[in-house]
Length: 504
Image (cartoon, rainbow, N blue to C red; front, side, top):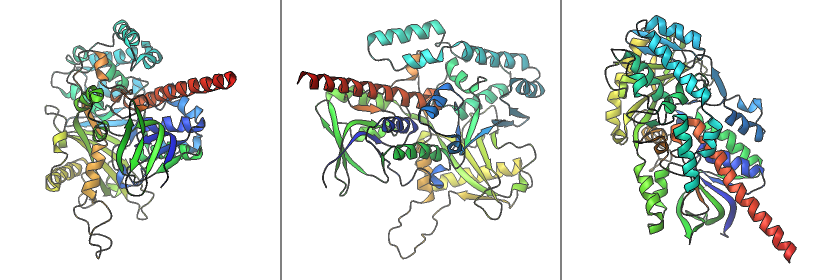
């Protein structure tokens, strides 16, 4: 097959790269997205946490406006008036966005600690309101010594190096208040550190940032929105692609060699838009890439979000139970495994003629548990089922595990090799796409150990790890910064070409 060519070649389907691709396709560049999966919106691939924040931010609204994304295209998003509910053995708190309603909840449940908890939330709100977030977005991921100095100066002047330990340590003598706050951070953050910076808490718990949206059908449907925009602007989407190698030439990427008879796709810019560790399989082992490889290897997950799904009768859901619920078993223990569950209810299920509801349950496990045999998870899931029965007392016999199911028979028993992945394969892949990265920063800049630039001039990183500490806002910001970088270089090239024509 003759060699194909694309101005922008995007490997993977993380949001940052898709936003970049949609903008550049709209501006007339040829964009191709290589999706390693069959379809980002497949039902089982979206059995995972489907909550998203920062959609009310100026940053995201700017993206929607510039891409001409209309209101009816956002019907997949549902704003939650009560973002979530937290249930402890002796407490039930509706975490309202409205501060006065939240304070009433906290005063009822934690009367002795209320003033300290209220002061904590007020500190978060004040920190968020006074920080120049646009300036931070401009300075983050600095290039060069001068830009790095300006970033460090901004961090020092704004107190971004402040740790949260002093604020949290005095909250609640029996750890119930601390576990209440910690559970929210675990739900909304993509990074883990033993003593996080105040900014990390602020991005999740401050008044303007705690608005939660639910993506109907899962995060894959939000990705599909931007994939559709790329196609609308004459871009191409190639699903189920297999990459044999990335072709490097001196200090540039020449293109990507695909498996089978696909041949090679040449490119002007290559965006690695998937988990960053996957890039190690394609980077040449040269002196030039030594630092980049070392930095990638240092970014490791501490936990993974694992998700299972139940089918249940809506009538067994207790009155007052919210669509999103954090269930804490023992506040004295580590908030992982079955001791810390996130429940998300869809009711009624529109695709079920019997009017059944679906309940997705997510939990955190240490990263080394990813490849445990299915029997290990069967025990965990049986424990979760028992906890659900205690939470919903009349659910016995009316709550059935729907995913993952062990060794489901192939639809065609005559096939020697099954074409579809098993439930547990998809279960692990879903978890792999939802890591919590561990960081040990000495200062605020250490939250971002990787830059989106690489030693190769036209190889850029839009991986979820780059700005993971900023959550979904980090994805939006990384997309816009990558757009600006590429487009500025394109404009310089246009000007040089015009000048050359005039000389001739």
